[in-house]
Image (tube, rainbow, N blue to C red; front, side):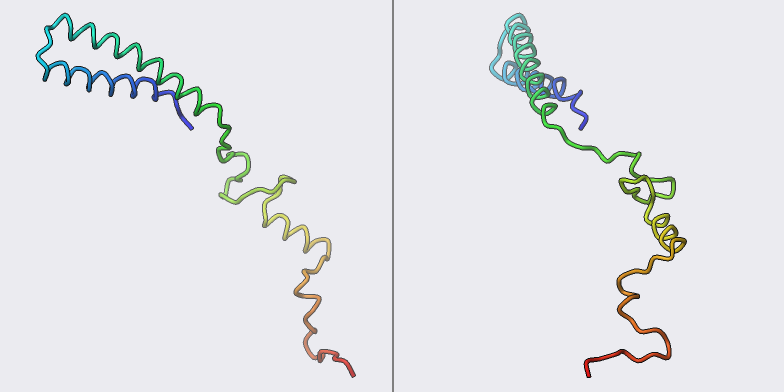
Length: 112
């Protein structure tokens, strides 16, 4: 999660609100600037604290290493699903579904 902009956004939003409120209440220019500077400093600190809190949560971003060039997810062994299927065919392994089905021409043996 990109949290680098949070302090600036919090600070600028609070500064805009402070300027609007002081303008509506007819503050002098000097008072308006003092309120603005204090508001910006206080809300910069608040924004940094919010950023640190959000950064403390460890959120796993999807790793690009887990996806191969074709966009397929790579398993823990580093092989894609297609590679696993091809290796299974080369090794002569049979899937669970194929073991339960009778071959052509054979009838399923049932209890007699």
